[in-house]
Picture 1 (tube, rainbow, N blue to C red):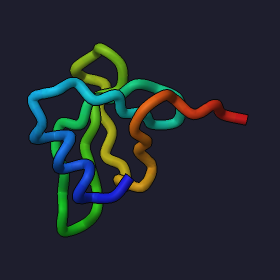
Picture 2: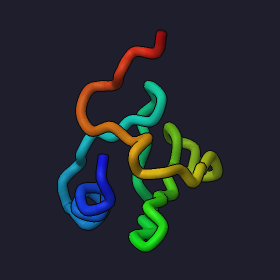
Picture 3: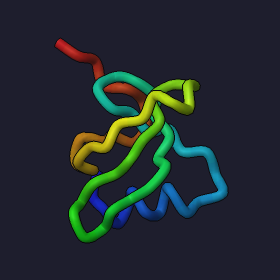
Length: 65
């Protein structure tokens, strides 16, 4: 995913499926200048990670090998 799309998803009122390493995530913040996003993994608000937006995937989760 690119930064522009991550921002679009973050700003959207629609629910968009986003995945990180096969896990569903919610985008909580996008740092456009650094290409990073803070995401909530699963349903636990305390389970957050800051990752490069290119690690995020829209749509169905990718299978890990």
